[in-house]
Length: 334
Image (cartoon, rainbow, N blue to C red; front, side, top):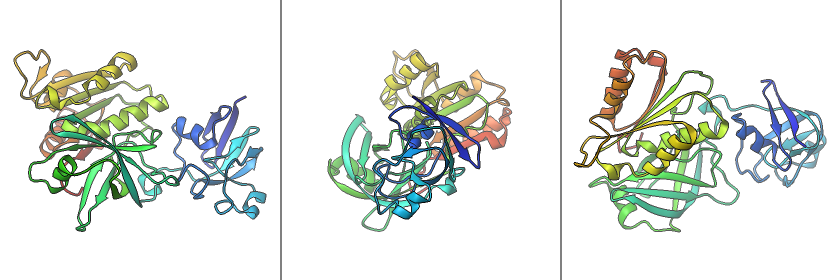
């Protein structure tokens, strides 16, 4: 049977189904708790059980010593409830509550989804997980001391692999390496998470999601996170690209529209003769549909010119300045 968990001091409550860990259930409920490895080895998710009984699961002695077990501590990544619980834990309230880590990773899969777009999926060491908020980014630490930043395209609940969408930039040393030399099983170093581009879950406003090119990556993470935790706010996705090939995950966006009710509008700036959809600049398509943006919240990701134009024109059409959030792809360290 399911058990109820109450967190202190926040008062948040959620239900834990049979077989689920407390951490899994919290994340599924949209409650951000700290964690590291998700397998009882690091101790980052340690919390105190104030009342009720838990099964401590596979918590390792090094992460949860005997004295702490006696004192009522538990590792939420592997603890399961035997009764209703009250737990004292520090919740993740801001990006500053998430530790920045430097980690090795392995290239698990390379998928070329367009002539100039590569999807990279990275595998972390067995005892490591990267906690992040949907929409944040990581940086590759290159041998020459330089860094290259890429947004995470997967949602936090699906963190077995880290997903990145990399556009090939002519003359770009790192992206040329990705397309010509990188291979599966290569070992790289990353650092993160970084960035303040994440979904503000405490708002009730309808959400506009505007992506230019591979700016679709963090937008994808936001949408998948929102769907996973059951956000009911209306969501509209506008994805701008030069041509059809630039809509490299168009089928996924269409599926969201068909199955989840997310309005989807693709916009091409250089369409072929057979294109029957919207054309021009993607942010102008938003304005054509919504000349009054005063009731919305906007998340915009893409090239600097697109983000700057969107911010200028959206606020001119009533969007409150504090409801505009952007992730600017400058093709350099962010």
